[in-house]
Length: 404
Image (cartoon, rainbow, N blue to C red; front, side, top):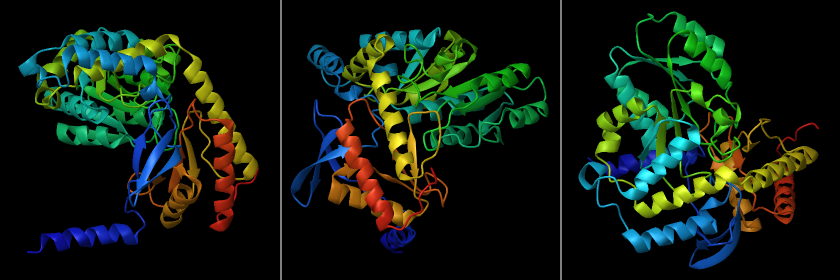
């Protein structure tokens, strides 16, 4: 059998549908974010990145870099293995204390990524709690879906951000069964924010534990960057808060926070924690420095929100359609996979603007978009250049404009 022919056939289908993904070769430049170097055909050029999940530019923050350098000099490169083999490094322990404090919880546990923390935690809860049922928001992230699938327990989907539909489904479940309500605070593709208080009210009414993914909110919302739950004074009511170190905190890794018993339960039974080499101590040190800084500094959040406001205002003035939402994510709607990729390519090749096209399966067909995440480091000049380019391309591609 010609396996390569089977592979090529499915790749050709992706190309024909306009959903084949091509990744630009970029190099971040220390101290120059959001600038980067692009390499193509043996040549290098400067580009401005408009779609980074390093939302606040903390991956370039001098405090973070200094902490990582110090940790490398002190401990070396790697962690030496899983924590079951190599033990808890001091930097892991300090970071978990920092994270528990950030969310006002008794304990925290580190994972190698936010994807793994969701997958491992939900799979463990669903599999180990007898006769459990997980109730998942219909638009939850792929990592949550994968975790729930591996739990092999009963799963129910409730309509996106709809507490009434959640209550309808909880009402039908026997009172004595363990119930886990899994949802996100900020949804990364549409940028909408969940009605956390109403969801908690319903979950508590029916004795369900709550699992809140704050991946796209930690560092950005709340007086200390604890996420939307902190901002709304609700963190103490959430059973488990999950987050990442790889977005607004600018490093890499995932984590959960909760009661000491809950976190110890996940630590003891989650294969995604037990059998994976732990994060290097230098990563943990950098993340701790980033979290500590954002607990007290408001400058990055304030500047970012101002840049988001300016971008939305410019798009409105030019009639460039974007989804209205209360978050930092600005989805510019193209609604055509071929044109979405074409606009992305032209922006990169002709204007030095890097923004990835978001096509199926990340978003449903017919909702293709360019996902912009303005940072505190973007300038008004960057904004002028971007919006002029988008206006030119909107006309070039004969795309409809929004009515002001």
